[in-house]
Image (cartoon, rainbow, N blue to C red; front, top):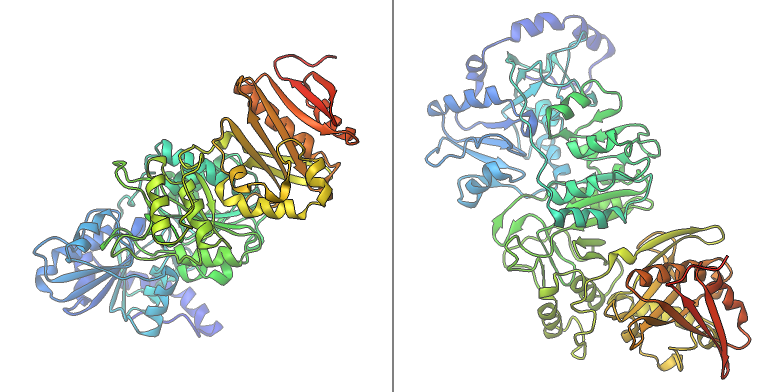
Length: 637
């Protein structure tokens, strides 16, 4: 019987350490002999993922004909499907997560899925709500002090071994010795089955262009020095790979994969700026290649802990700038996220999604990001939907979601109304589905009946127009094209200006500011007209401090430009940076000159255009100066 390590006196602990070798020799058995303790009706825990004790699992399968009513517990199958074949009624698999190896069996009712936040599983074992008769685990050979490491699969295996009536360990020399809270003493194990075999490996998923585009958008939300965690799937992996240009990233995750190893090799992950466990990668299990397993072996940079530590939201939140990236299967227009099922069919599981979402919410500067493609693989259905498919599970409530990312951009939903959420999500849906999504939003009263299709409804958001600059007197300023969701922010910007500023700084397009149609301003076609917004502070959370707009003239080679900067940020270089960015981008579109009108008495605005690096002509007209910036000629020396 396993010994509870809690409460050992210093003397008894020392004695156990000295006398472990006889215990180990006495406990050595072959697999079939060790499994004699398994009886009909037992609940058997099976180590899973890359740490599955394959030799023990195979031996248990071979003796099923002698048993009945076994219940097999585990998290994740990545090898061959086990204990789920049709016609096998001596046992039943109960999984806390569904993967390809057991997805069909769960769908057909031959195996069970238990929805649960992964952090809560060890509590089921400790409370007795889910007692374990036999735990089958895989460990490294004991060290000089008699401690074996759970290696790449600490997760829930350590808790299961601590509470099981019988513990059988496959001792595999290929199992890495991982540091952290991964160790179990030989005195807590009843039988040792020495058997060397390769650990199960998992290749990184193939990343298509959609995944790469999503990863690029996610990278724009992640700051240098952030601590990161990503879920399963190609979109999460692509999001990690897109971070290779970042600096001093840290890792606090449940699952460690080769994508993190890639970032370590690129120098992006250093853990130098972590506020919890600085200098260390914190994880609970590894799933990947032999290169990854070799990397974590006896590596002081990596510490593996039980899942109820890594996924404890109060611990996660101690990491400043904690960013969690999770994949979704569907998102409805109110922001509800389904991540574990396709209708009634269970596809994956709750896993650590909510654990890390809560942790990121509590983190200083933390972010929670949901990623999904805009459509199904066959392009026939939108994954952004008016309402979740019947039977779909709500993994993340509409109150919990913060950022949603598709290949068409980012929708920031935190603090947004249902109307604003619907418009934001429609803007990142596939263009072929935006009209019907807008019609559905009107039908269910998420948006007003008078909300019609605009120029931006089917327009593709120009991500290449996004730009971040650092100005000495202002700090970081993020410039981007406007979106439909910006209507309220633009109104607030104008209302915050001194009354005269609206006329002096926006003289051409904005004749009568209080009656101006702001809706038309932010809903542009991104071609004949464009509105650029400038936000001070962190991307996605900054304050709107500047606005510029151009309108293409009939000759298609000149554009009329107007701009406004909040007085609190005047003379800080914001206007110059914004107009320079606009000028460079329109020049690439073949526009040869930009024109602006400056009221008499506001000659200081000349400087904005004179600093652009292009020739500037000016002429006085009735009540104003006409400024012409020639984009097709080099500036005079």
